[in-house]
Length: 362
Image 1 (cartoon, rainbow, N blue to C red):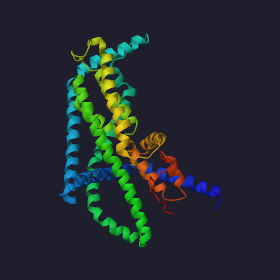
Image 2: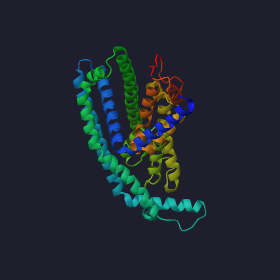
Image 3: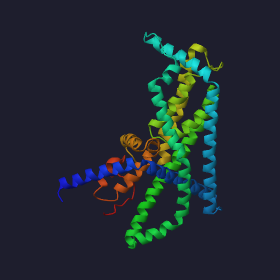
Image 4: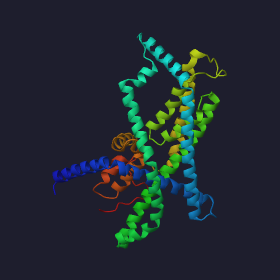
């Protein structure tokens, strides 16, 4: 087969795969979320098992499941409580936002500044909130299905070895597939577990900083930051911007802030931004790379492209899963000489398999 034919086949195959991922996003994205939640629980169980050697693996797994489930329920409760608090102070926030809109119009010498109500209930605002509501509703509706998938993944786990033996009767080939699967699972599991620890650390430090600075509803904002940090790059930027924006529209500036007065709201927001950004920058650039090791050996440009592509294909779930999905693709592409060049392009250092990796001919 000549090069032109191979190129044509590659283009057609890529188009078919992308179309399949997009058309089947309702099922595939939900199942992918379940798989990665399963891997987070398994990673947590491994940590518990290593820390408490006297516990059996099954007991450690139960403890991990209950801990993750309890954390998830607690997160939902925090978000609901935070939204109710913002709702109670909605009138005060509206007055402050209207004042900021008037200030912005005054800076550019424009008149007839709109109110927040007008911006929210015009045609553009209604479309925006309808999109957010639909995306959130779809994700919320899939939660029960995700938990069901996770439960069946645990039930099916015991039979994976036997199925693999039947699929690959040749011992050499079977061992190669086991090594590839173990490497892929270990890399993704390490990434997800480490990202959870990093997000939790940033959340705690940010929460303390927001309390010290007197930002209202600090617990809600910190919980939101925990979720945003799962989105590569863009999530960290959004996590650094959200608290200052809320501080900017906060009805009252704490009296103990140096020089605090109603007209110093921008200085106060800048202080909040500096405090939140410090934790995002220092932990994200110094601690996180050391904890991640080689589990996320992706080029920074690839991370951004993957975020955009998976976001278009699968929406919000795709944005959260873009990094681990791309890591999985890189590991799989590296196993064949025909696709290894793709894995090299995706990797950060040109070595997609890390140290000691071997290519499986295929």
